[in-house]
Amino acid sequence: MKLTVLGSGTSVPHPKRASSGYFVEANGGTILIDCSGSIATRMAAAGLNWPELDAVWISHFHLDHVGGLPAFLAGTKHAAEMRDRSRPLQIVGPVGLKGLIERFDAVRDYKLLKQPFPVEIIEVEPQEPFEIGGMIAVALKTPHTPESLAIHVRDSDETTLVYSADTGFTLELAAFARLCDLFILECSFPADKPAEKHLDLAEAMYIIRKAKPKRAMLTHFYPEWDKVDLQEEVARFDPPCEVVEATDGLVV
Image: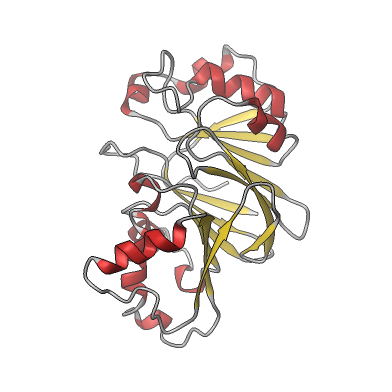
């Protein structure tokens, strides 16, 4: 499984970090995890095979996670690379996703779902297994917005990836990610978080210690991190595994 970080930042404009987006390439297929405003351009700039994308996962409905989806669909309607595609594109996420896309569509009657290829919108419930991009997944409700979901993805070779998306502190997330191959965990603030429904470093490291993944990746950094050495701060917590800082363009 190969992961390309397209956006490791937040809704706050930043010169080096776009808002959320991650491109997963696996044996089963490809998944775009979250789709902020700049992600379509980031996929193209990274040379990723976006015309053959199998699925998009939307974790919740904040614009720095879903705001680029209507623009991406508006673009695929007119892209020469998509004209001969017949395979469906899955768009998967929480209950309410279909209605959200319809509201985006209604702004100007874009007909976003009338593509050269089939589009399947799939709304999932927590704890119920589902297929996404040729892989098996399950979602977990997280304390951020009413619809927010973390996702656990398993490829055909048993490689596993867990993405928390935005979340407040919950030990359920540690159990959900236990012993996974890569745990992508939000870490919005270094310390003294101003928002209850996000994580700071101490909380993130506590969850990682309980989850015991093979590798962890911290992401969703607010500008408060700009003057902080993340690896130096992580080392203070004696991490149980390699902890990687997500940066835009990073491939693991």
